[in-house]
Length: 421
Image (cartoon, rainbow, N blue to C red; front, side):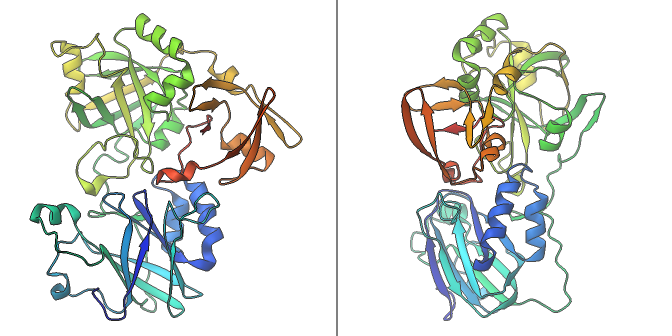
């Protein structure tokens, strides 16, 4: 422990975010987290809560259990920090109208889906300047310092200075320096054509990826939909893409249908796929290793599978595209003829009768059932995150418990296609 008045807290965790807030603000925080899922990483809702001192969100390098110390007083001194390696120190404002500081991971947040307890630290009521000290686990590992047994996070709180304003640039205290990534908003959209740039590439025996700076705002402005045919102009030629919306390849293959997916691959052997990844959903390797820039939206261009026979190491077109460096210009447009025309009719094949939602099964397996509805449709019958519902398929009845927040992040559900296990 670093301070005599410190309180050590341990919270079960499977994610990369930690939440600090007054217990009386639980309902506000819960509502904001649900809203932020539609807004992406740069959520104005979460940013507003951060600015008001209602919520402090901070990142973790890896999904270890939260091992933190909370103490009243000044930030740690250089002498106190000397025995360990630390990430950049961050400050924030936090208001504690009841003095009950909750420390939660997304595995313990009390939204009705989690069974793990969070932690509550009793403090004097008031407005505080919160200073966050985080151990640099990578640096400690390099030093092979196995003797360190103190908390991995130290949170100090001192009174917020009267009249001081707080204008955070992001809703989350990141592990690295809080500065905008150089590619953010460096694009233009005119006449339905996206002109942007490459963030980075990933070219090896397993991954064939190109990361573009097309974010959630651009995705919505272009009105991109699953099944669309996209044309990517880059590296001196035009490539054809199947748009998968916000679905990673494994889920998209199930949604579109394995046969349909295979047929497309046969008809278009050089076909690529493209999908959006938002900052709250680390389902892909990050486009950059630099921790300063983790958490932004990006668009992934990839082969249909790592073993695509159309592209080989000797294929000039393949090499040129997937070896494009950061900053290279790209142009993306929607082709007038979509690859898969039945998606809209299939997605809209649902109806509400009283308190019942009638929908269709898109695909099924021994472990997974994919339905043609998302939270927008489920809310029409009063459903909210964490609720349970009864599902009937033929003569079979099952109780379905929504555990979408258990993944450690904000509970991603592919747009318009809720997935229940």
